[in-house]
Image 1 (cartoon, helix red, strand yellow):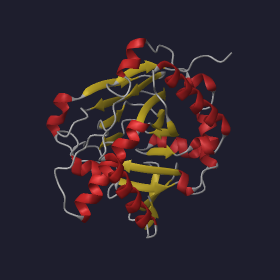
Image 2 (cartoon, rainbow, N blue to C red; image 1 turned 45 degrees about the vertical axis):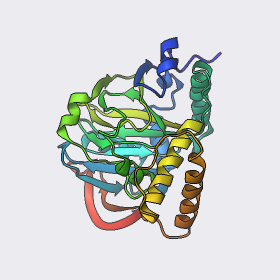
Image 3 (cartoon, rainbow, N blue to C red; image 1 turned 180 degrees about the vertical axis):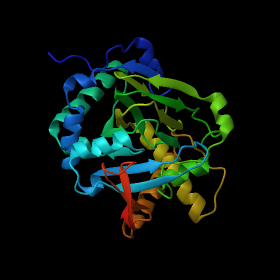
Image 4 (spheres, rainbow, N blue to C red; image 1 turned 90 degrees about the vertical axis):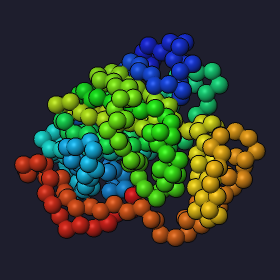
Length: 312
């Protein structure tokens, strides 16, 4: 019989799930799927569209972000370069690379659905994160339900209130309409209202929908996993904000309701679907400039290259 992945889920967590930030214990490391050796093998099987590797600045108040490429390195060479440098590697949709990860993802959400009354999830996703000592991820927000699972190393996670004071409607609409990536305006006074978690191996933190957050690694290589999910409520909220963004841009409307329930959801969902179909016929507006290559022999683990654009 397989052990539970969620090691200490209590009744109170069912009431808090998707409504308040919760921290739990997990057993993902026991699967053996998230060791450096296992991840090195995944890296070697990834196409350029399956990963993103970035380097960033030191100041949380100044957004400095560059994106690079792995080249022809082995998986272990990539991890060694990250260990000595300032980089953050995302391996996307890993459950599509190997069915063992799909099985673990299914187990995670089977446990959540068993423990949270009425919870029905779909469009689940799993990403592996490998990141350098002392690196950061800037203040940002995500459009789906998300949890961060720590495998090895330690990181500090700052979670901010899910309210318009910390994420404006306009900023959220830009993220949802893919006019920008996840980064949103940040003010130093936000720190007064942050919940701070020092995440240890074997811990997971789950925060409410649209709660902005940022991350700082401690002085060690970090391996983490993010899981994403959708529910009917999350989809309704997405459709409403997407529809509001379309109506604001095409008809100049303002003061639009953001409630994820009611009759207004359906026309906004229709507007969102039409807009997405029209956008799909044209070229992608989201591009990333690639201007470095990972190099474990370089002092900072990377070298500059001639820039080129890649679809985000």
